[in-house]
Image (cartoon, rainbow, N blue to C red; front, side):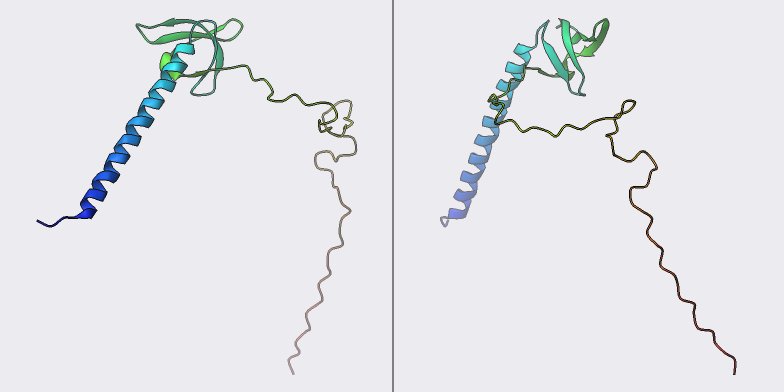
Length: 143
């Protein structure tokens, strides 16, 4: 039987692929366990469908959680729909007033949020352009 280096190359590539698959799987499992450990009563959370609330209680037997979305509104959800615990976002670097970009101040109308000088709904902003006049087609004579 002849020595085939292609077969060895394929086996090595397959082994590397399997190694990286197990490694990423373990990494994801650790991240999931860390997220689940952070979920406890009193923590503000976000669900898979974008609902924010505070956990009131978690029932491990039925995998149900009670969350309060607004004061007095308590929802009963499945625990697996909890995506993550919401962390307080702090700015990475505080900007000084000299570095901060200042937005131009826009004066608003008293009764609406439309800026002064901006057109209202349906109002034309440009003068009506003159429509081009069509030239009459030459008449054909029946001679």
